[in-house]
Structures are given as structure tokens and as C-alpha cells.
Image (cartoon, rainbow, N blue to C red; front, side, top):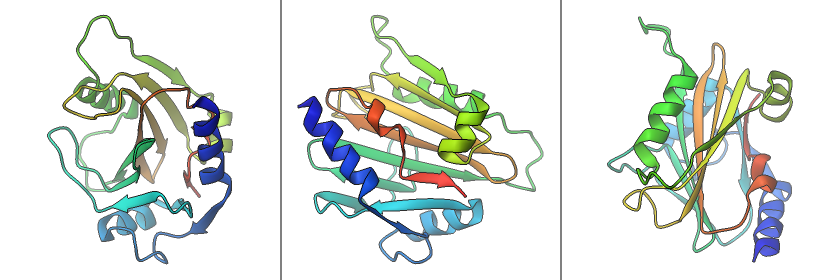
Length: 183
């Protein structure tokens, strides 16, 4: 099972079509607008079993894009472009903590493991000034998948986005090459 998931994620990542958000009409309009404003490059997988859903809202967050593979995984994206009229400062490390507190289980036996990427690696992999990811167990009311990883990226002057990867089991270290990055 682990090998199949790693192979699927490898294929999704390496056999994808590079499309700007403007040129792909299957994206929700709000996602395309925000992605263009933030200077984000998104690789849309050509795997036929992966479906793009319209932006959805739930009790926890408002998503700009949801990508699903029926039983294997689900990826939820939400983008926060820089607001030049914002009067308060934005701190991505506070935002990810707030987000995780909203979506992770409150079971005290479960751990949340956060890993901050070095600045050089953040730039190389994601074109970001700051990157962190956290592994957690989602609240049952948040997802039917039992394991979650949130990857948060921030670029000065552009904005912040989260990618929540939800899956059943196995390790997703092979999926650190996300199909989305700052350009």
C-alpha cells in the first residue's frame, strides 16, 4: 500500500502539466484570481482519477481549491494574497498555529509534529521566504481521512497559502514536492 501511494504521488508530481491559473478553465475563478495576484505556479495532474472540486466551505475553513483522489487522498488549498490596505501585520507562524488548532483532534494522546524548513530549502523547493509543515490527526468532523499534513508557505509582498493533505495511512514524505509554488 505504501509503495502504491508513493508511486501515485510520484506520477502526480512528475507527470503533470504546468499551467498558469489563467490558462486552465477548470480552476474556480477565485482560485485563479488569487493565484495570479500572488504569482503562484500550479501544476495540474493529468492522472484521470484525480478530480478538481469547486471551492468549498466547511465549519473550519474556506478553501479556494480542492483536489481529490477518491479513496487515497484529498488536498485542500487556501490562499491569502497580501492586502496592501491591511493595518495590522501578518505573521504566518501564528496563522498556521491557529489553523492547526481548528482542524486537529483535541485528543491529548495525539501529537502534532511541526517541521520548519531552512530558508534556503524554502526558496529552492517552493520559491518561498518561509515554509513549515505539520503532521497531525484531523478532527473526525473535519475529514474522513485519519492522517493530515499541512504545508504553509509565505512570500514577502505576495502572500501566504496553506495546502492541507489528507490521507488514510502511509508516509507522505515523497509528497514534499508540492504541485504549487511561488514563481
